[in-house]
Every structure is written in C-alpha cells, then in structure tokens.
Figure 1 (cartoon, rainbow, N blue to C red):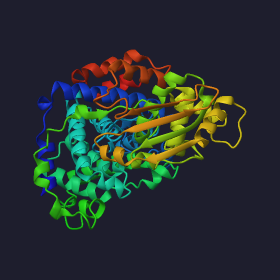
Figure 2 (figure 1 turned 180 degrees about the vertical axis):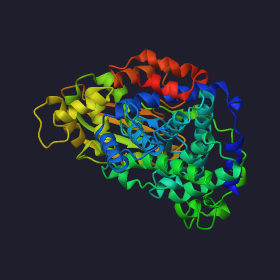
Figure 3 (figure 1 turned 120 degrees about the vertical axis):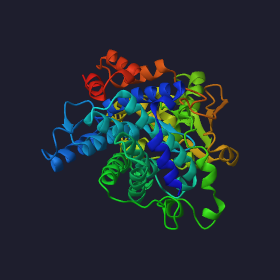
Length: 468
C-alpha cells in the first residue's frame, strides 16, 4: 500500500536526518508564516472564523491542553486554534507554496504544528521534525496529483493539505506506523476544496486551509484512539487518485506509484516559493513583468494605449475585469497588472487604500484609481500555446504595452519565466524580514530571533515570545 510506505517514513523520521539547507528553509518559512498570519488575523475572514469558533466552543475545552491564536492573547482548544490560524495564514494571499505541487504548504503545516507543539510543550526539535515531514509529504503528494487534480477543479491546498496536516499531527502525537496509516486514511476521505471558491470571490478559499488543518488533526487524534481509516484511500479503485485526479484518458494502469516511493525523504524543501505580492501566485509573473516595464515608462502610464498579456492558460483564466470584492480582486490578472503599472510594488496597505479610494466602486474621484480602471479596460489576456508548453515547470508571462503618439508611440514588452520568490529567483532573508516589517509596522522585530535557535527552546516558550 502506498500510504503504508508514507506512514513508515513519517513514523521513522528524526531531526538528525534534516539537512542544514532544509532547516534553514523551514525556519525562513516559519518567519514568513508568522508575519503573514500576524497581519492576516486582522482581516474580516479571520475575525469571522475566530468569532464563530468562540460562539460554538466557548468554555468547552480542557484548559490544560490549549493553544494560542496568533496576534491575540486568546487560547482555545487545539482544533480551533489550528483552524483560525490557518485561515489567517492564507487570507492575505502571501503564504508560501510549491510550484510543481501547486499547493500552499506553510498555512497548513505551521498552524497544525504550533497547536500541538504548544499544547503538549514539545521541544523545538520535535516541532521541526513535524514541519519537515509535512513539507516532504505535501510536496511529494502534490507533485503526484497535479496538474490533473487542479485541472479537474480541486484546490490542492484543501485536498492534499488535509493529508499534510494529518502527517504533521501524526508525527507530533508520536503515532506508530499503523496509527499513522489510519490517520492518513481518515484524511483522504475528508479531503476537500473546490477552485470555484477561489474564483467565485468568496471566503471559501481560506476555509479550505482552516478545514485541512482541522481535519488532519482530528484524524490523527481519532487514529491514536483506535479509529481506523482506509489504507488504500489514495490509490484504491474508489480512492483519491481515481475519484479526484484521473479521468478516462488516464488511470492507474498508466501510473507507477513504485517510482514515486523512491523519492520519499528526498524532496527538496528548499524548492518552496515565498510570495511578494498579495495576489494569486499565477499572477506574479505578470506583475513582475509589468514592474520591469514600469521602470521604463515611469509615471507616464496615462500614455498607455493598450496592453496585451500573453501567458499560460491557467493564469489567463484569471480574467475577472470587474472584481466586486477583495477576494475577487486577488484573483484578477487585469487588475494585478494595471495596479503594478500605476502603483509599483503593491502591498496590502496599498490595496486597502485603493479600495478605500473606490477601486471596486463604479465611480471614483481619485486619479490613480481611474488610471488603473482605464488600463484594465484597454487590456487583453491571451493564452499563448508556446508559453503553455513551459507550464508547470515555468510560469511565464509576456506583457506588451502600446503607447500613444504623444509619448514615444512605441511598443514596450518584456517576459518573466519565473516570478520573484521561487528558488531559482529567490527572496533573500532580508527581503522576508522587510516583508514582515511591512505587514506588521508595530511588531518588535527582535522577538523573531527566537526562530534562529528553535532547537534550544520549548514551543510554549517560542509561542509566548513571538506573541509578546
């Protein structure tokens, strides 16, 4: 059984096996996660999630086994803390991910690991064990199922994310191989998340992250207490692959899990990406390209006559020209490009200000907002066959700008193959810290030094220090 081999890896993995590169990467990912989540806790979806948890579970948990809600002085039960923290980690569209696996990982892994590690006062080394196996298994499973899984309309962060949370929870709860297999079996039957939530302008996308953490933890606790799950939930006749990945043109007969199993424990955690802009990752190459062009045209964007964005089909499908709310805006390629050309390197604060100035309204008196809307109206999106051939190993975007006769009357174009933040085009640690400071202006950045030496502390101390 495929998951049996995965379970064996999870159960047997030890901190001492981690490479310096992996430890450095996951510590950077932890810092990035905490900054994004700390700010994300103030967003509407996070507040609703927290209020709902308080409404349902208020005073109904064991106070001796509790976990913190980031950026607050609140403690609640393990399930609720992980759920709310995962929502907050994903809500800004700034959490880490993996290109090949097509999944956000940190927003599932860290809330799950923090809730259990704090509640049981685990060591930093134990915490890192859980985090690393989460990244390893998540990347491995995501690469198996995608791009077919995504092309069928599933949001991998919710579906494979449930397996990830179950992996982390099983490791930290010290489940044996059989218990871990049962936990993963239970994860598979709860794995859910539809991309319509992403593109429909709802908060359902961040619910996927919250529920993945919640269901993964629940599965591990059930398995620890003897609840059984299907060991063939992944590759069985009516399991995950056949139901949610393959279609009539591709089935298990065309696929070898034995070859995949050779990669267990060999996945390069360093390959995760970090996000610079609060938009869907599929829009980032276009944003980067637009910023290169802005360096040439400066603030003369009102002289732009029209814009063509040639990119791969998945990115081109983000073609909402009339976003009605913040959730839709983060999925809008036309607006992402137009905002970059007008504002430059856009931040969460910039987006909030533009919305306040009427970006999503029918009318605005602010020149920059009207310039953005004018650029959107003169923009076309093109799914380019040659660029499609490069996806998913690359995420290319070619932006072509035509200027009017009063300003050079020329055509400017540029192309980006991989957006800023991928391993081949990385964000440096100082840039991640700048990102943190940009999101959390009043946070005492000195508290983050505890992350450098996680191995030397208990996680209760780490969480308390970070939440000061």
